[in-house]
Length: 382
Image (cartoon, rainbow, N blue to C red; front, side, top):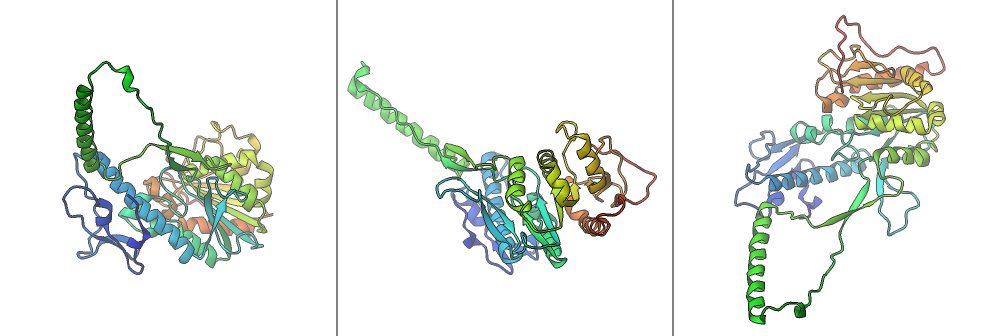
């Protein structure tokens, strides 16, 4: 079932959940609304509650995916209309027929001579402009999307590039292979074969009806066509670096990378060490899952990360409290929350302060990590 953006009306934004349940059980679904960045019931104003059926797991999953598709398209729309970003197709030299992805950039991303901010989300279902779908659905757009980072960055004079590292392939329907059976190979009488064929067709009809009930978006057999040079988050980060970030005029480039985005950044640094060191001023990681040992990051990279990176990790300690680490890379401080998906939003003010201090200190003496004193240093495994 296709989900159309025609179901969205801005200011406030209305999302009709009835569209998501077409072809399903005879139950009325509440119509919901995104109001002031929150998903709420239109009539009662209550927070959104996802109605599900315990006996219809595939049905539930497809409805959740349909809601996620609407949210993804809506966030893309906000990036263009509300944040004034441009949607840029990649690969830059793609032919008309080959699979493509895209990123978002501000008008001055490549020409801003001073500052450029690059945003990388984590793995999973999230796409460009999102930190966590769960937060967008259950809390609000501010905590779940990158929009507050983008708006503040632009207000403070940064150019902005938003990566899309999970958009690695397109899905197309797998070509059907028709196998023609020969009636001559059967010794059965024609009348008996006709009866068997009739029973088989009726059985298939009942099965299809049941599957349609259980799964309104019945899956077709699909195949994946990977996007050239963007077939993984790591490839995507390197591609965007080579074709956009490295070509930018900015004297100071800053990265904000969440979860697997941190791993993608470390891989970028391994592959483009000299270029990254010459262009990047500071990196803010939020609950990054990188591992300098497993990724085989060299000593010079680890030393650079200690001086230029900070990882805001999930922790019950107050924001910016130093958190012990067993890895010899960047300092770890508390994001002020023990929820992984909230680490980017909770560390938002500290990240901008970290970048501001990094800009001022560039070319001077090494700057300390943005920590507050605490007698309770706690090691947190990511």
